[in-house]
Length: 186
Length: 173
Image (cartoon, rainbow over all chains, first blue to last red; front, top):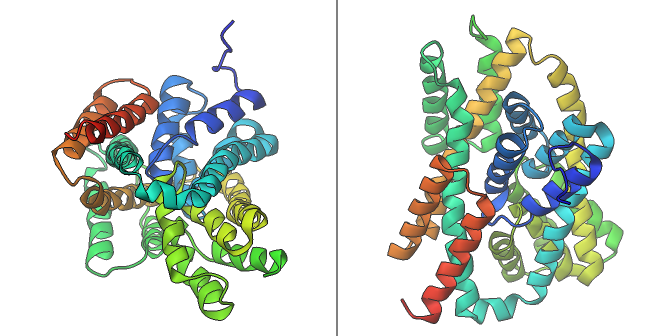
């Protein structure tokens, strides 16, 4: 009998984070895109609002944003046990792969097939990251808030490319502006 | 190097950064310049490995740990990498309860939009590095269309990209 992944329990949290969180090339953002697809679109474990809330808050947390994000989702699903399980499931397999890859690095570097395969996977990861950024912004693009959203996007681009501020500085500035100028409908 | 000292150095680097690779300056200063237990080449290799294996780029701390102290070092790197993640719990607990307050909602919405824009900004250098020929361009384009318009599992998109790229080398396409 196939396991019912729709049910939120520790075992299923472990299985989803261990499988989805450890097979995606292209960094944490691409992996968050994969988890969005699985947890929101396929399993409907939490609302999209809670998912993006976790995404936003994990940006404000020290350390790896990705692992903070996993802890946050695990916490929302099953409190502390969920947070611990999601963190262990999302970090142990990929850490073991990284340790093995470190040992085998010289071999992988000289093998053109492995190098090319990884390069192809990273090209796919570019698209995953692009679609993830679109999925995050899309819910906020409506007639009432488009000007506000586009202003934040424009300011972020300006601070990133022209002033060359770090990501955390830009996020703190955005948070301050959001706090000082709350929209009437927010 | 003592495993506890290595742990404290990597934890300090992890705690004082807000994204994966942002901890590199501290790791380099402590382990390469100050303690001479890691070389610049090894640090670069650790970053390349983290970009060539699944998972977040912060995983380079595991490779750094391995280069410094073998498997014990790798475990120490893993611990230092994951422990700061628990700091998100009080944040999500407090802000999650206040999420409906207009000012908190406005702050979070602004952070989400800025983060998503920064995410989009990351796509540009990533694409310049990853898309270097017609094959990788086609892989990226088809992946984008599949992910945007279908419900196909992301794993299949990644495995297909891996397979097609490997086959292209075998048959010298």
